[in-house]
Amino acid sequence: MQEYSTQQGLYESYLRDAMVLFGEWEFEPLGLENPFAGSEGYLHIWQGDMDEAVSVSMQRYIVENLPWVHYQEVPNVGHMFALEDDIKYQIIKSLATNKTKVLL
Image 1 (cartoon, helix red, strand yellow):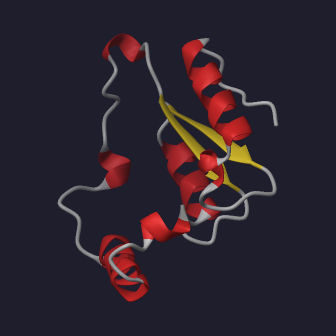
Image 2 (cartoon, rainbow, N blue to C red):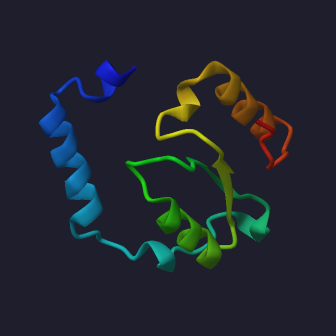
């Protein structure tokens, strides 16, 4: 799967990531309003606690400020953890059964 994420070349991949991370955005992420009518839904974020591509502390900060975001920090995994079958199926099951905790 790593070949897919860098199919345009490793440096091109890093460049695009840097453009998103450090570029100008047209909106303030913490200024987003709850998109779910009547607060009946949630945005779910699963994050590996060993992720070197996306800052765990940044995700924690966002979740503290946006109460309609449910955050699941998965222990001992990195950025591509969701591609592992056992974790992928647990995420799908938690969404299908409306349970927010993923048991790993």
